Image (cartoon, rainbow, N blue to C red; front, side, top):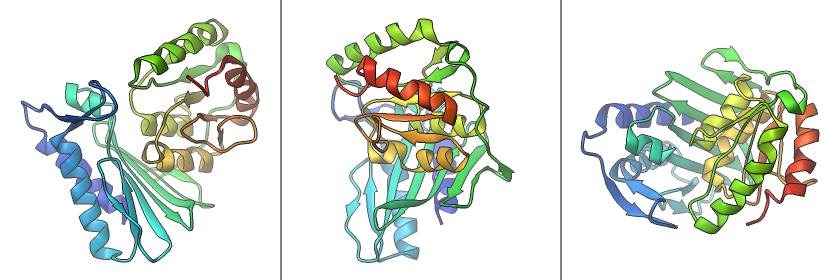
Length: 255
């Protein structure tokens, strides 16, 4: 169901994007934007899933919030990478995850402009279309390609910039793609060695975190904690063990 919902939403977003697409609303700051297509995508996804699973709950970035009675909740980001989408950049995705009694059990990230769909079921491995995914072998920290992202509030961005300033000389390079879901899937694909970010919401990370984990990467937050809005980190296991304490020391988990 998640695959079909993501496919339909991806088609809508790719083919239905108006040439004069503009900002429909803002959220946490003037640069944290929503477009009419975010809203249309979420409506399509929730309508499709509710038709097939009427007793399930929903949590969506653009306001979908239904408790449900089945113990299953769908966590939906109708456009992850909205600013990229607004500007016509290709790094955006549809992210749909299913939770059962609070545990993520299935995840789909569809990246229409890449022509790729990533998926995972808990305990069943991760796939890009039909290809089984596995994380990249861990390099030394000095040769690691690390992705990150930045929040929308000025104070948070300043702190994140300071972390990058200190981290950058210690790694191969840093990438900022603009879609947490795609970055997590790129760790799963071996296109990135690691990804970290503070300030993610459940819909940003639910599907991608499962896909990275099922591809053999380690995921988490601060030492001993799960990935969360405080901090999300995904990396090949040996690199994870180096990066997690370093990011903790650098204060990547607070503003």
